[in-house]
Amino acid sequence: MIAFTRQLLPAALLCSALAAQASEVLKGDYWVVHYQGALGKNQVFIADGDPNHIVNRPGGAKSLGVYLLYEEPGKPNFTAYDVEIDCAKNRVRIMGAADFRSVFNEFHNAKYSSQWQSKPDPWLAQSRDFVCKPTERQAKKMEHLGVMSASQMSKAGPQLFQILNREAAKAAIMQKIDEGFAQMSAK
Image (cartoon, rainbow, N blue to C red; front, side, top):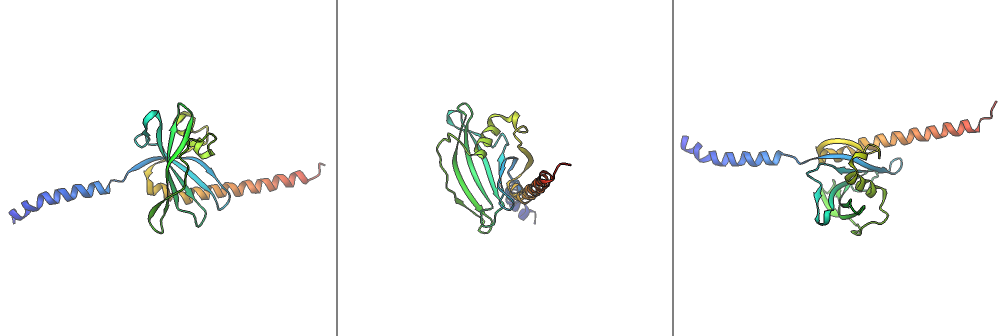
């Protein structure tokens, strides 16, 4: 029995090390850098701000992972972007994009332009500022979500959409109230 245990011990140790590695989940430090849309059709852009995940590229540029979460039915769960940022030249471009749909549990290449953007979309400008001007994140209304796994981050989408929809409903109510007061005659 002891000889049998000695033979299995190396295999057991190897398997336990592999199981420990498999259970370690890569975590990021996620921030909401931009959001847009309307009631029921919101989009939230989330950047992984973990310094270990912001990769230096040749020529001084940096690579940032940005995730676009969709609220609208029929859209992918999210699109993952590899955004290249050149702080010295104040420019940004997309180097890769993939859509993820949980129904199929797979990624598919998404369309994108890899050209440097002369007038970047607001989410790309915010992503650039996220990397190049980290002290201005709060002033630019970027919200820190915290350190978590990518799957936890993607599950935060519905909660973020609830908040955005609640704020949109409040704004619509306040606009109606303001319009009502504007129509009242002054006494």
